Length: 312
Image: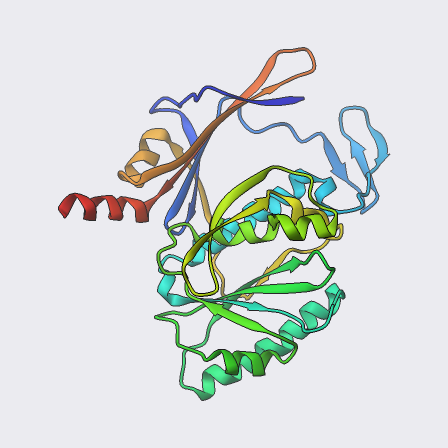
């Protein structure tokens, strides 16, 4: 199979589309010939059955998550959707980075340390009279081998101010940094970029400099904006195979997925700004086009911003 990008092809008003609601972000997917046929059935972690031939075959186990790009990208997409489904008002969240003072490389210990921190954090909130929070956390491997944790703490109302000294004491293993997310209209996309991309200096030092080099804008230490060069996807090479990139608390909402007509989808989108679109063709080994998929993303927050500009 070959997948290539083609000129955008939109569905008719009566065509069936799949709509995924992720908070302020809505995704619409149109598949011309329906979903692809599932041709394998998993037996266990090592074996599967090819349903077309009845043969039992072995899975190819990979050295790192980057060797299976589709799996890594799907994990990041799922995390992006989870964040957007729960973070519709940026002022209700805290984004906290937890680091280690030593070169801590144990992935199992990483989550054990976090759960101990989470218990202390919940006690701190209760003692301070703050409402309970939910969390979405994502692990980030460093070029030197150590782990960082990015934590998104979600509150039912405006997030409380927590001094960094208090956060550091609760964590107890190294430096912590807390940031607000005001002004970010797609927090899922913004936050997941940290998990895949590496600054060029770190990428070269870790031997992961292969990839597309781009320039992005980031927040400097003084809060201002600055340009930096990053290698797209370089960090994915540092994740061990089978590693769970993210976890969340029980109260976190999942994205809602529903099928409807294109006309119904547009009524629901109701003029929200389209921020992304692509159409791909799936071509078989015989050269014939097997399927065409159109994908669009809309952001409700940008609609509000556009309306405010018009009023001004």
